[in-house]
Amino acid sequence: MSTRTKRVETVLPSPPGHWVGDGFPVSSVISPQAVGSRLSPFVLMDYAAPARFEASGEPRGVDTHPHRGFETVTVVFQGELEHRDSAGNSGRIGPGDVQWMTAGAGVLHEEKHSREFTRRGGTFEVAQLWVNLPARHKMTPPRYQELRADAIPAVALPGDAGTARIIAGDFAGVRGPAATFTPVVLWDVRLRAGARTNLPIPDGHNAAVFVRAGSARVGGEHDAKAGELAVLSRAGGGAVVETDRGADLLVLAGEPIDEPVVTYGPFVMNTAEEIRQAVEDVRAGRFGRL
Ligand code: MN
Image 1 (cartoon, protein in one colour):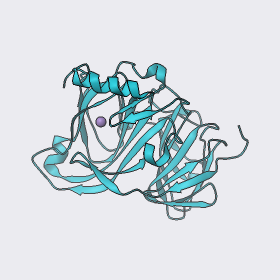
Image 2: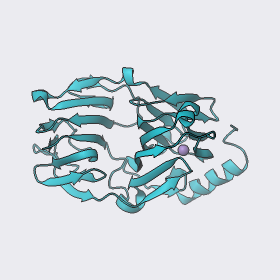
Image 3: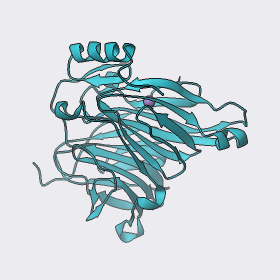
Image 4: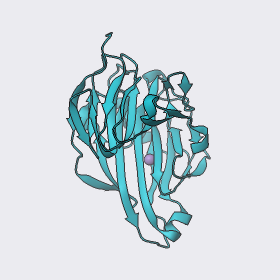
């Protein structure tokens, strides 16, 4: 533990993009290949930067697929998503909304542009995080939290620096609505031009600051521009962020889960044997049906 603020260990560039299904042109800002377990409990972060979709008759997205052993957290900035899963949950989330889905023991789901968005066309911008579950909770029953924009508290940053929407974790006594299995912080931060602020990220948490728009100086010396991820030290409490022309940030942090991680496609488990079991269980229809 440390009395200092967090340092920047590295600024990761925006990786080359790829498509997820036919609906999401993403960049895998966090991936096992890029960061290993360095940002545990975060396994993956796919970011779909603002992209224009023309009006169409057929919703784009990802067809039915399984997940086991972790949570998918989908943050919509622009556009509208529709979701349904084998646990019987379904919903539609738009700008400012967050879907926190616990796959746990296993779900099948589909993720699509909403029918309304598809009909009208428009700009889509979304982030999806994969948050790992500790071994003792990997086979927890699936759960679905739909966090509407109006249920996510916004905190005014001191000195008129901007605002922070608190999706998960505690920010100066304001608690985000997401229920999590381990301590997780997720903040949607907008900084005004000329702002300087100290984001109260807990000491001992792995943490990163993703720049969605604009540019920011993190930890007093490292510049990060749109699409880049500043990876912070585990030691130290708080992260100093400054911006000349303004910045939109996604701040993520969490208590590390100190367990082996084996990923394979849509599964995040602790051992290769558990991965084999997951593949077999999907094949045998044990994830239910959609
Ligand atoms: Mn999925």
